[in-house]
Length: 486
Ligand code: BES
Ligand code: ZN
Ligand code: ZN
Image (tube, rainbow, N blue to C red; front, top):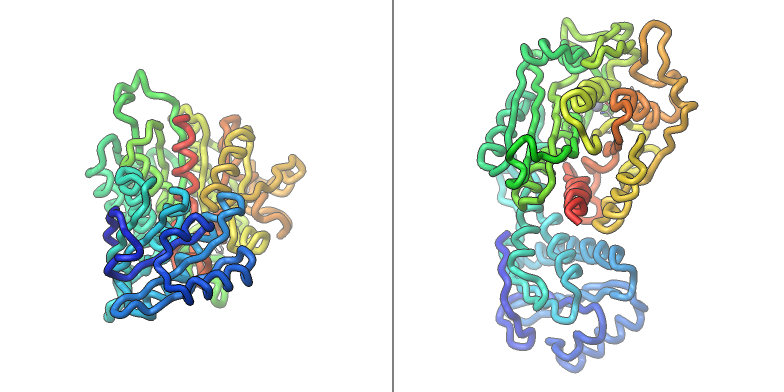
């Protein structure tokens, strides 16, 4: 989509027009005839602050009138606008409208931004394997006194990274193995100022003794990779002046068959998205670098697929992890925590992290607990960080809900033969036992675990997302990094 900023006089504008109506102050520029005004006023009274969109013929153009209730709390109003944007986009698609002006006089800049964000996120679809061309909104002219070109460009760069994430998560494993994804990460990093990308191959991973990543990779014909992306703001180029980094860890299972504990029935479907955590964390680093946020951030991305090959790792195997912890494998489908544990331990040993945050499509239990409307989050030694994440999460509407990390759960991951077992001894609280397992490797370092299993990939359209990868979590973590500068 091409965006531009230009003053629009709604009464004389020649083109398709979207008119945002948040409160009565917009009435002085209503591009409507007398009877249309009556109709809209009637609808607004009837709707009692509820939201609606009406469209009018202005041959050869169309006018879309978007009414919303601006009196609600800000985050709620903005989310409503993102959802209305998706509805509007469907109407435009039906009408064959590919260019439009957005007239937003009298609305707040955050409201305009939310509307444009909704249009942008809703417009994404995974098109590269389709032979027929798909509908997209091609040009959007935004008229708003308070929305600056710089702000728009900053947002556009962030949205670009969200699209990048969605595209790579949507790619099937036949087109994207660990090596190819690492190559892509390196290629993107090369063009970004302040970002370094180190790709470790199987031999290096072996010499580091990352027992979790190597075990999960054993059934695969493809090599694993361990990718380190580091963004250092320009004033911190000298290692001695570098601040302690925020370390982001992303689960990069390129495909999760379950391994020898193979996933039954249709449980395997959508498992191409099991590397969404890694793609999310890479996108956050890229967006931070694009917009030159003054924060030192490192992403650690362990990449492999999980398959039942001839030499695949098996239940009963006992692994020695990067930090020396021994782990009894009880189920090869609980593979995410094994590769993440090595990455978290690597962060503890080699950086001095202010906080470690991971994102992982880790448990079906998280989806059963809260469905597809948010992130299941847990923390150890990171109460403050969790509070900040909750606040920004509510603001950008990528919300998280905190699950407890009571000490009683520790019993459930004790093994008869090793230090830990890789899944709980009871099927209950699967999201928490997974998090407990990971927290062991973070030791005393402030640690936040984000289980994004419910939100990384939608199997039905919801809000402003079509079926497929969502990029959920990028806006959250980007906003969290932005908060660090204050
Ligand atoms: N990748 C899955 C979790 C998942 C499930 C993500 C559904 C997205 C949607 C993970 O590796 C897994 O298989 N977890 C198991 C753990 C169990 C064996 C302890 C699960 O949740 O069933
Ligand atoms: Zn699994
Ligand atoms: Zn998995």
